[in-house]
Structure formats: structure tokens, C-alpha cells
Length: 256
Ligand code: SF4
Ligand code: SF4
Image (cartoon, rainbow, N blue to C red; front, side, top):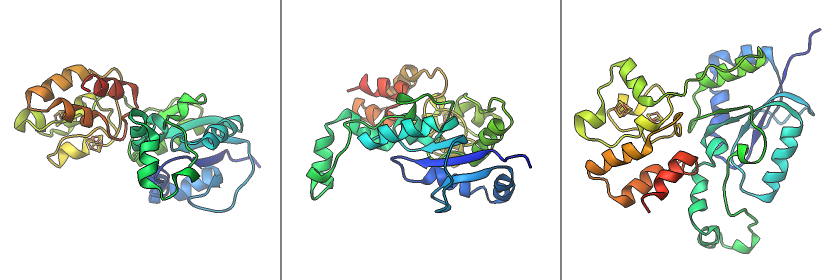
């Protein structure tokens, strides 16, 4: 009998939301479980099969010396490695530490900060090992996740769009909140994937899918400034889930 491809799901520093997106594929989960052997997925089962694995999905960022070692081992046993979510692709919200002294945080958060062994930064998986594909979002979109898994199972490139959220607004006929009401919106520089969820609810995008391909953050920051955003406000706008993504980090640093 033909062997089913082996899928492994790994967690690093994260909230588990992206792994939950996989479990959230209610209608497709049985078909998926039939097409692949789920060899490692602690969020769903304690059963674990040893590697090597055909496809590894990696959630979370690298924040400890142990993480940095473990991801090299995951890479070693994985034929293809796909990172999922803002933590794994850009360091996540925990990358806010990258702009400060991490000891200042541990001394406030933990009763015994001397027990905490952590790195000074939170970084994307691609900063440590070769990554075959990065799937954006906080959390990721389950349709995009299924597309990526299907693509790897069939040996083709995933069809995931890299244009801005604005294009999605135009496609859906959503009135632009920035043009119509002067509401700050990160949509012009944010990668699509959510179907323009926030503008469809009459609010601005706050960039949870991270920078689109070649984003013009300088131009958007200028427009936000004309709409009344302070320099401090602009720093905060670009420092959320994807604060350490190079394009957003550079723009936030320009307003410090
Ligand atoms: S609402 Fe935001 S994402 Fe939509 S078109 Fe306007 S600026 Fe772009
Ligand atoms: S509109 Fe922006 S903030 Fe809202 S879900 Fe989409 S990418 Fe995330």
C-alpha cells in the first residue's frame, strides 16, 4: 500500500491560535486525515510518530536558547518546512521585546525573574533555518492553510496572493474607511488573506497579516500623519503582531 505523506505540527513561542486554525477545518479535516498521516500534532493528540516528516508546519517564534536548538532538529527531520502565523514569520507580538531591554519585562512579569532563561529577542523561524514557505496571519486563514498543505502534497507552489488588503476591498465593493471617513488603515501595506475583514466591518486594518510584497510604508505613514497621527502613534501603528517584520520595523523606527 502506498505510504501516506507524514505531517508534523510544531509549536514554539505562540498562543496556539494558528494550530487551532487547522482543527477549525471542520469540513475538510476528515479528508485531510485520510490524505496524510498526522505523525505529530500535540494540540490534537498525544500520539507521536518519529520522523522524518514530509511536511512540517511550524507555529511560534524563537525566544529561548532551547528553541534555537530545537528548530534546527525540526528542520533536520523535515522534507518541507512551512511557517504559519505572525509569530513564526515575523516574531509575533512578543517581538516587542526587540525594541527594549528584555530584562525590564521579566523583572515586572515574573516573581522570580532569575528563573527565566530567555533570549534578548523574539525572531522568525526563517532567521534560524531554511523555510520553504511562510504563511502569514494572526491567526492564519484556514483556506490558505489548506491550499498550502494541498500544494505541498502535490509538489507544486502554493497559490497564495501577496497583494494588499486594498485590492480585496475593491473586489468586494467595500467603501474605503480611510478615504470616506479618514480612519487610519494599514490595508495599503498589508498582505491580503482575510478577505478585508476589518474594512468590511467599517474599521481600519491593523496589519495582522504583515507586510505585503514591496509595501510603501513611508507614503502611508505620511498620509496617516496628514490625518492627525502623532509620531508616537505611528510607532504604535507599525508595532503590533508583525513589529519585527523588516518593513514595519523600519517604518516604526523612522518615527522614534
Ligand atoms: S479600507 Fe483600508 S484596506 Fe480597504 S481600501 Fe481603504 S485603505 Fe485599503
Ligand atoms: S483587515 Fe487587516 S487587521 Fe483585519 S483581519 Fe484583515 S489583515 Fe487583519
